[in-house]
Image (tube, rainbow, N blue to C red; front, side, top):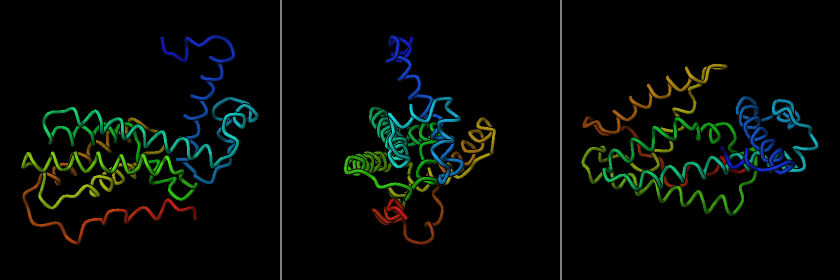
Length: 210
């Protein structure tokens, strides 16, 4: 039994409502970042007042679901850090992050809210963990020498851009297919990649509200 299900009375209902709200928010805003917050309440099956009690504005709700995604990324990177094989650590991490659909939030919601200082700290932590995963993969000799930590985020965003409307299972199948192709590219011994890699922080400007 989950902790949420075990909570009694109103506390349990509030916790269950929160899960419904966050799931609905991800679905609604990934489909249309400009959608009104009332669509989230409608999809979650909760009253708008119940939603506003927990998330007083759309910006706060957007910030929350994006921060949740960032924390999930960090958690998976920390799991990968325990894997003794550096190449398996990196590729397993990529597969799990794609499965959790973390980077759809980045692709669709960047610039729709103002990140908090705490989110900035966690983003730096995520960057440090990613850098370590790449360094360890390089040490195995299996990661192409011109791959950099910033390439990892771009690969995940490429996978997140794949979406079959109304069919999450097919979406994941296709994402896994193209992730496998991209991983093959990471391990390739072919010609140098064209153009310079992303610079550290180069993509951060999109998080500024437009």
